[in-house]
Image (spheres, rainbow over the protein chains, first blue to last red):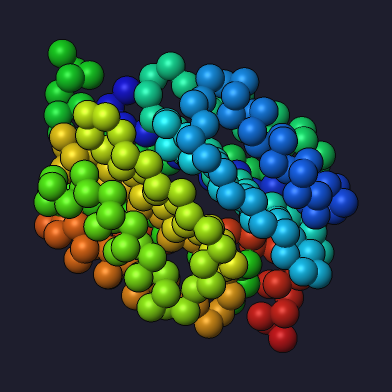
Length: 124
Length: 124
């Protein structure tokens, strides 16, 4: 690993629109996904918009998870940003995809914090 | 605009290491940047790590701002994710870069929520 963190940007299309507007469901799904991959939860903020849509952010010791939903489009944007080699963010991604029943999704992985010191360490 | 949101991933290198470990400074800088670009703040979570490092997330009605710092490397990862055409995230980015005195930074802009319905609207 030559980066401090792994940031997964998840585009969730064709989701269950009812689930995308259900704050309690989204909060428990993201919290469970974080717990299941061994994250240490610091705190979270979830908010229900009117007439629809939910925003949620979970601060974890290993960075953060976020979700923003647009039920009117069946779409949600999710971020899973983690640091540390023991954390496997793709497991959390799978759970989140399943939790909103997305039938069309895209996963983009971005390395964050690529530092010369880390590259040298991984070459040795 | 043919996407629901604009997500800026900011890699901040060669920062002032003292500022990267100063929770109050980071929180007020990010909150001010959000306010100055017209965001509606929902709530925030900031946490100081031991021996060093800060994590902060701000939920805004227009999505979120996040920061994770590694003072030992002079590095911070910042995200500014906004939706709506009236919001200009690049102004917030400039303020954040300045607030940690980064001498070497990279800005990556990612469109989130590219939907067929929005593309058709923008073509008309």
